[in-house]
Image (cartoon, helix red, strand yellow):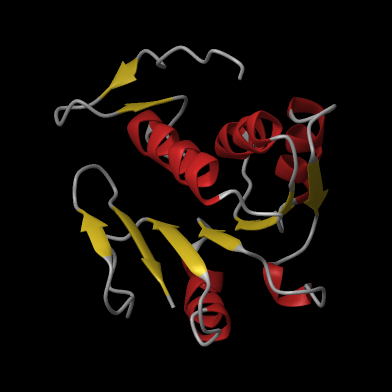
Length: 161
């Protein structure tokens, strides 16, 4: 697995980010561990941004020896940057919201999209039974039900539907 160093940008809580938009490094490592442990064949991610967190997921899939990540980013500039950053990894970057996805249900879902998409995604995806789900920005008022909710930084929630 590729060794990733901790980004230099820390906050008063001790969390680190690559930039002001990226998920906290500490949650990226946790997400990577969840993918390593759950061994999914298909991971869906919403809100790719520049692909920093996508790389942690993809590294875990490579370490597992199988699996694919399909990640959705509605902003064409970010989607293009993510494609470049994720080249050669088992990742498909889709320049669209996840509502356009019509393939098979994933084994693992990671939600990190903007607030304009989140409510619809939660309603769509959390209605599927048995899906392992992780959500960034869990400190926002989303109806996430039962699961583990970590409240540092922007928050992280993980549970099974």
